[in-house]
Length: 160
Image (cartoon, rainbow, N blue to C red; front, side, top):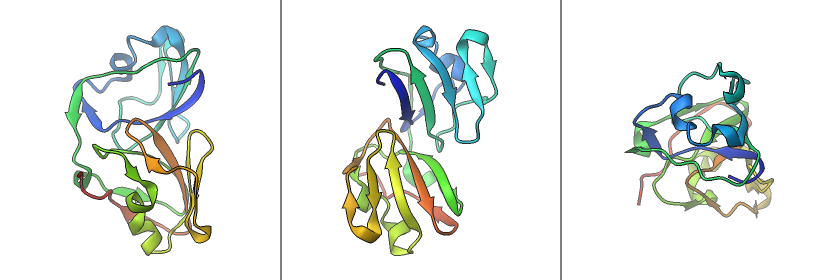
């Protein structure tokens, strides 16, 4: 993670899914962790309204310096997780075991004319209607926000 805001996820199901455990080695370097619902984990004040790490969620993390988050877990099979995406904004994890071009990763959304825009945590975008793709590959460890023009049950393609 870089200094400032990061949008993160993991392709691992943690051995211990408590946020206190996942962030234990870096709590002095992060100010806040938020999910898309507005729940927070603030280690300095021992506040955790998020609860446990959820594989389908991406998390916004504010870091006071460049750091690496590492935890132990089991690899996720992306076919085991269906994202019930809603009309409007959705924040999702990336759970495949290899990076994949966003065009291929979100193909079922574009084939069904649901995806309006996808964004990463660095301001890059994928806008299928205009063939704009500054994201390139969806990457392990990163989260993404998607704007849809209708609800859709989404599953990532199989791992390679």
